[in-house]
Length: 527
Image (cartoon, rainbow, N blue to C red; front, side):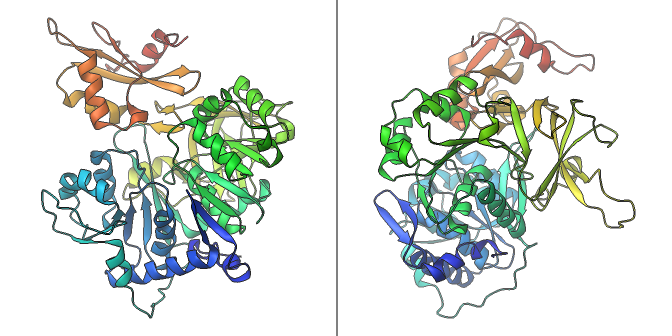
């Protein structure tokens, strides 16, 4: 069994080299073709001065070059940083600068839109384009820009395999924090491989499966669709959909057996007609990234009565934590399930002691899926990664566990139930959104005196982003102007669904904006 990320598909490449590994649109790549491209890219990365554990950004939609780049980067000893393709230039530049990206793999059109922001990325020395020509870029960048052909041509025939062990960094995934800019969660080879093994075990994924990848690879849940498929020698079908109908068409045309989605997408799919043939091959479906409405779940199961549905809970800092077996859905529809294989999930009081059954406490995750912390942020890492509460005192080396910040309960049989979050994070469209990141953009507009971004319960989104503002006395306010600014500077999932104006925002005893009071005030605006 593999121990390193780029070894995930080595068994399939040697035993069934001509089996299909990746499908994108009308093209497909066998395991041998994927291995060849990965090896060529790894050599090219070395030729372009990638050193051990340096970071390489991949800012692309789902396509073969995206997939091959992930594995090539780690095979060359580097660390891949998948950047969500829906992010705008300021967010992309922040990520590239924050983790000192040395090489960026992207496209001609994306580079053109990003060029001005790359001046803030001093460590970047090479940009590789998946195109055949280099655009004229203003302002001019002090970097080497290579076409895809020139990049591959730079590969040496002899690859100097670097020393890599499973505790080396493999990837950095950026996730929103409760305050400020997103944080880079550092994942080791062990983290990613262990996650693929665990999930493929309880989903019973085999080489016969054809998994549809609709979620971003910058999302650990999305990345896992790729890793589980390749680990088991199955097929991963790549899809960046424009409309929910595109997902239904792909399910039918590609004879998909496994589909993972988040609640907003499931809600959209539940309103569509599904061809009856899908029920003959769609073996399982999964949900994470928020609570699945019962009505949506029932509607999906009516369309695919032969399919098994797995409700799951996870967090980027520990990848995946729990799953509810399909046979338990009818008996425990509100449960998050139990721990996934090779993980222990605890419910803990503030003093670190274990909670009694049904007593609310913080969910703590321990095991091999616990990530390596937040990139270059020891303070935030110390807040989230703390000693495991069950560690024996006789063990001198401290084991770190992830303290999720989520309040849950556990029943007598070990099933978990979500209660709420400790912080002000907004969970919308499957994304964790920092209210502070939205507020920073709004304050730069000069249009408001005070601003607070809050999450309000929404049937399809989980939570919708609502921004509540006040303005200087006598000053006119245009919510349209503010909304247009948000659309220009924020990705779509961060753009407010509503903007509300108040004379003054409520404050708590410490003088801070009282977000809880605002949530209560606007709790029913989407009902």
